[in-house]
Image (tube, rainbow, N blue to C red; front, side, top):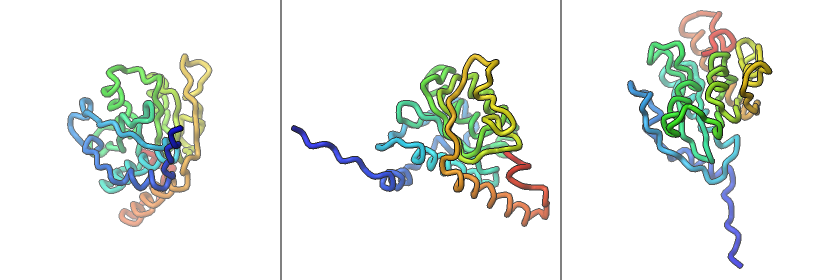
Length: 206
């Protein structure tokens, strides 16, 4: 009998993720046609995938975008990854989820993503939730909730609205403290730079 292959622990997997430096997740003017290399994770788990979404959020933080990151996973492979690029693209719809979905559609060669899951660091807004329903995403996994504008149960649950013809499974609270912390830190520093006390994670959500 062949010996059973030893699985690597999650900590080791998370460290291995840090060695990847995929150019496709950086800003490019032709993001609609970006070819995103597929990355296989040895031990798929919600936390491991959410840590990759957090790395995307960090990229947004570094370019002074609201730090939200998203990835799309199909059969254990990441086929789309993005971070908020509203200011970079001068496009109010350039949320992390929307850009990641566009990359995933290009990878699959179809607008339907029925066998895909989306991981995002913050609960999708209503616009993004609507897009997730339209592309038939199977499951949406998010970190911290958005009680003021979230479309996954925050102000409404558009992802599972009874009047719509597709419902997404929802998993929430994955690494929620880390996902919330990067947003809180971003807006804390922004208030310090501008003196604008109205800037907060709840008031400037994307």
